[in-house]
View (tube, one colour):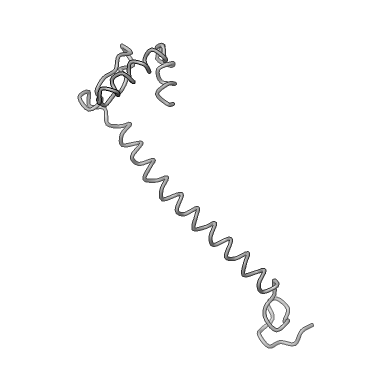
Length: 105
């Protein structure tokens, strides 16, 4: 999707450019777009690696972030279930913050 916007910003016909790229992809080539001419090109031959590195790092970061979010979600669920089991207070009916074994108020 990002490439579609780049083509439009470069003043190219995005549908024609996308069609040309799909033809190259169906032939098994790695494809990028030369934004000066609008023609498909092989990024590795032209020395374009930045997009690959950005995408690789984004995917790597996304998996780490997703696992952290899942861990936080599980911790929140565990905290809620322990509150429900304990009825929200310490054992023995003591008020919150009171030492264990203190008489109920």
